[in-house]
Image 1 (cartoon, one colour):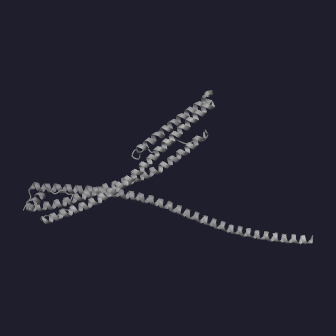
Image 2 (cartoon, rainbow, N blue to C red; image 1 turned 135 degrees about the horizontal axis):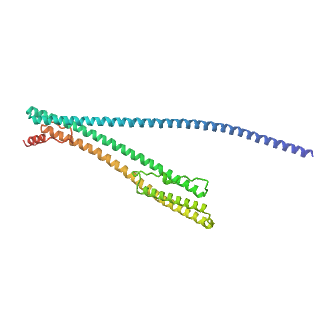
Amino acid sequence: LFGNQTQMRGELESLKKTYDEHQKRLEDKVVSMGRELQEARRSTREAQHKLAEQAAALLTSESNLKDVEVENSRLQLQLKELNEEYRSRLQRYVRDLADYVDGAAARGVGEGGGLQGARTRHYVDAMLQDVRAAHRAREEQLAAAARSYKKRARNLLKQHEPLLIAYRVLRDQVVSLGRSDVDPGPPEARFSLTDAELQTAHSRELVQLRENKAQLEGRVRELSEQVRLGGGGGWRSSAGHGGWAELKKQLREFTHTTQEDLERERAQLLSRALVAEEQLAELQEYVDTHLIRYKQEVTRLRGMLGQEAGLPRVSSASTPEPPGRAARRRVTLRS
């Protein structure tokens, strides 16, 4: 008995020691996990603080961007007004000079007057070149603004379509519940874009399908309300209810399948159109660059030809020569 008691005491001591070791390891683990939890909380607070700072910076940047866009619009409007004033002044000066030259020609000036008239023509040609350059700059500015507007409109259209699809899916889920106390919201056709410039043939077909779906859903609701208020036994039967449910299910499946097919085809066409527009823009830029080089080369060659012929150099290759100057050049070349 004493031997067993001694053995049991030794086993108890061993178990107690093992328990104390496990307890100590658990306490150490709890302390370590507590430190890790505090570190995780601190990291979370820091991340939230950084996120708040980034959100504030984003809001500030968006506000600054809006201010810059407003200022840019104001400056563009001011530039447009200045360009229009500049063009009107140039045109008025050209008219005044033309009247002066016509009057001098009518009065019959001498040889010195003819030389003065040639100089005046040079000056008028330069002013006409400035007028054309101002008009070209304005046209390029308007074309760039139109391209930017179309690009932003396409981006907005891309963002609008997924939102409309998500709204349709959520609305169909709400409608499929069959609860009368839950409002599924207005039909998706109400949120469709109506701008004809942004719609393709497939977009218009999708809008038409959505409108038809909204009309059919409205008709189904009216018939359901008539059935509910009519009190007809045949209409209240489970078979009739099952028929309406099956009809609505088939309508949803048909609309969903048709819209998916049209949206998939529309996405493919949009991607192909974007690629084609990018290629067209690259080709247009290439053509414009080489056209400018060709114009410069033509201007240089005409200037060299004018210098060799002993005539004053014309400032613009695109400005037509007066009849008298062309006749003098032909006489000089013949001689």
